[in-house]
Image 1 (cartoon, helix red, strand yellow):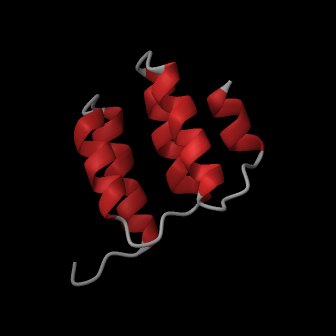
Image 2 (image 1 turned 90 degrees about the horizontal axis):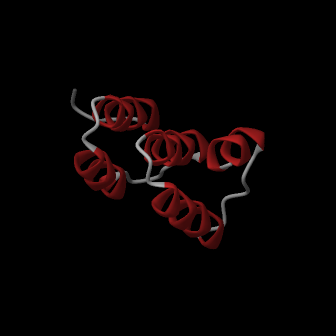
Length: 79
C-alpha cells in the first residue's frame, strides 16, 4: 500500500489490539497522521478489554485535549 488512509491505519491498530499487542497498537496509533474518533475508540476499547482501565481513561483525556469530542461509542467504551 503506497499511502495508508485513516481506515487502513485504524484497521492495523485494531489488529494489533485484538491480538493483545497493545504496545504495538499504541506505537502504530502514535504514527497515525490524523487519527479520527473511530481510531481513538478502537484503542480505548482495547485497553479496557485488556484490563487497563486507567490507560483507557488517560487516552480519553488525551483525546479531548487534542480537540476531539467524544461520542456515545467512546463514552460506552470508556465506561
